[in-house]
Image 1 (tube, one colour):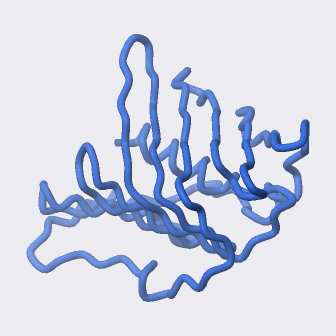
Image 2: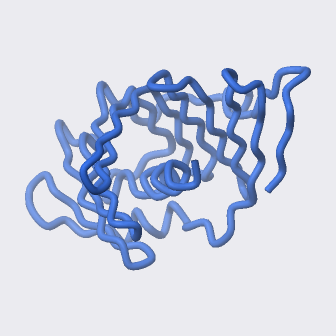
Image 3: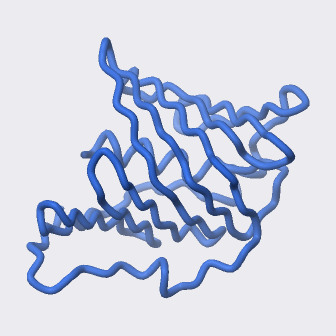
Length: 170
């Protein structure tokens, strides 16, 4: 679980570079390769420049992950639980976007906390994000039909924990 959240946090904060955007949303496929195993996730996400985000995983296990100023909340319907964790040292989205460097026509590189991220653009929008995390996992996130600067409501990004769910605070 923590490995998945770490992957998401880093990818959320690295989309863009010279693509100054206020919002970004997209369907996605995320492949995590670790040693000889590979896991593929799919779903959709919504990100605002104020660091609020929602990742909705549809497979292999449905879940919603809400990112706020200082917390991440994972709502797992199959387990009827919500896990609330503190985000420490959350990267500043605006600063990372400014720091990403163009290394070829459609390829950008950003470095955060010792990890290099390669961001491939297609039609001037983020299309693929590749990186190797500190646990030696190779992560590739492919965006499908990304939308930039379309309104994303605060209501959508507000965590919704159904009644009766166990709440775990970490």
